[in-house]
Amino acid sequence: MTHRARDLALSHFQWIDGHADVWKIFRDPEALTGVVRGLAATFEGEGITAVCGIESRGFLLGAAVAVELGVGFIAVRKQHGLFPGEKLTRQTPPDYRRLRHELRIQRTSLTPSDRVLMVDDWVETGSQALSVKAMVEEVGSHWGGCAVIVDQASEACRRTLDVRSLVTAAELPEWNPQR
Image: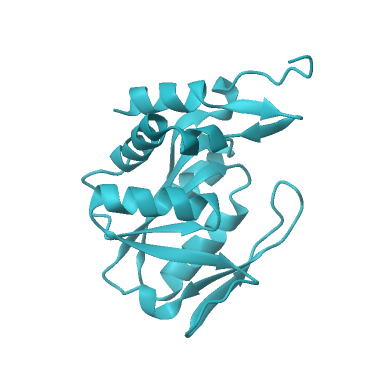
């Protein structure tokens, strides 16, 4: 399954003005289904009880992977969206654009018996995923790992977060400004 998901991710990847773009995956139902199944398969049988995702692409992919795994979804919101109730909050280290984000999870969405998988489209510095991992562990939940379409993380980050991907950044086509 992950080979098919890898092929679908690569065939729907494009560069636009020097920026990596995976949005075409979401428009094609076959690609979306295959990628979601591939992401879920990377942690199948590992006791995942909840999937979380950071807005925006993490919401889309995470919720779909949660359905595929038959578990619930936990939203991770950025600083300005409405989010009622008591929250866990973390300020991220700088990301690849040197930006910091405030991430929030509703405290009641996590329990000590949870094993949480984070799903996103891309991991590079791991800044957001590390912050989510800290919040998950703060309430006594267990970090299950991180499933992404594209992995561009360092080996140390990959080990710390248990990142599993469909594609590595090195496998992507090179950006060609002439295209």
